[in-house]
Length: 243
Image (cartoon, rainbow, N blue to C red; front, top):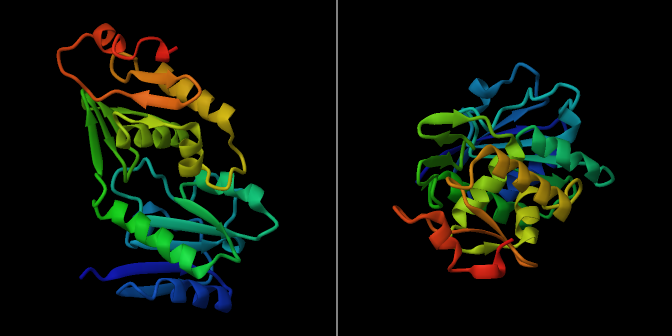
């Protein structure tokens, strides 16, 4: 069984103990740090399978010092940030810094345990790590996108939306599912922002390569990739559902 390396960045003893109790189902070595410093770059953080950071230890004024999820092979399997209950507006900036999830500091231990198990299943490859869609390749762990072996510089939000579409190929993805995946606390995003990010993604990747369809009043749909079939022929299957 894998022995996990876990880093807890918190100067609060009770908080660190609560984290430890939540993950006591894991075989792991826990490393405690009183504060996360600006020189703790990806090269250091990649040594850990799990990272938990208390908001008190994060400086949001230093843009992107934590780690870049688009940096190939440098992100830990799971990174979770915790913020004061009265400051839920911090979730958006923390997610933009590269955290996988953000929780209130009064989190439920059973909920955190379930979240860690889910994220680790993804990180261990029990969910597909890399998706291929024609000439497009997407790494769900690093959020790195390649088109004909050329890297696409997708912003984090657009990469998260692309990742969900590729995991749900052939299925309608409701807008609410995008919100639950990208901004579970709904602190900075709504249906309109999801529509805007998908519009930007369409502008970056041609519909001939990534034919994202808007299903009226239902969500978005990415058809299963079919070789040697003209896009127009595929569209006729669904008729006026698309717009």
